[in-house]
Length: 400
Image 1 (cartoon, rainbow, N blue to C red):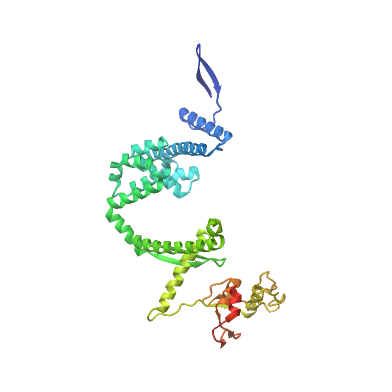
Image 2 (cartoon, rainbow, N blue to C red):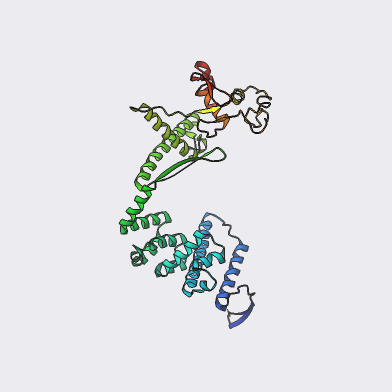
């Protein structure tokens, strides 16, 4: 395609002819030319690079690049809307414009749904549409408004507040804006909010599931009030764990202690806080009237226990221990590799959840053990008394 660009010079105007290669195959020439121009501009931007000179330049780049991305997002959303209005998706055998765009652009289902939902909302929200076109609000804000608009009980209210939504989406950071939209939606649709919360409460659940690698994953869902209560309790225990780490760090390094001197990461403190809640709940239950102590029993075979105990205490384990009869854990810690499967190896809870053997033995050195003799038919034939591995000075030495 040959384009003509007027260039002003002191004596008047001259026309410069520029050769532009056509890439777009869109039938509308104006749209194709715009796509080619945009593609060339993006190529030039990538060629020039976006490395900032300093922090101020970085802020400017973030804002300007984001504005461009928002305007492209407006084009993507309006394309879905245009396809939906024209009905051309049916000619291609698709049930909806969303399905056609998802197929043609190789989008995930959720992303295609976000574009379609935004298209339906912006069709009725002209001020929000213009704000997205101008790059003043982003895809996140539009999607949040679109989710509220999709609620049929408050659709009219959202449309009536088009300008307010646009202004707040532009002025507030996303977290604040999201909270305002949620609060407003709950106020306008009190019955719906109540029903959703009751449904969440009725479907409350908590699971602690062991993965194949032996680790555990905790998941749960709760209603708003119960969840808020649990969040407050967990937050208090996390702060306690943080104070304990800071106290230990200051004891070792004085006032020069920094976050780098803390013994645990924030993630680890959260996990330990939850474990502490469980332990205190179990201790309270044991001390309550009619309560009983909650005990976690770990069963480990004698050969593995003896070999790992020698390792933990600094002695060289017998390199042939467990190799001839399938004992040991089959690892490379000096215990040899027995035949598969290892018929006499065991390290698990009573109900069969595997426990890493070294962790179990290390815990047993400070905890209690009981000797159990099991016959070949898996019947217990002897049960020893519950006792500690080490007592007195020996127990102190192990802890040190």
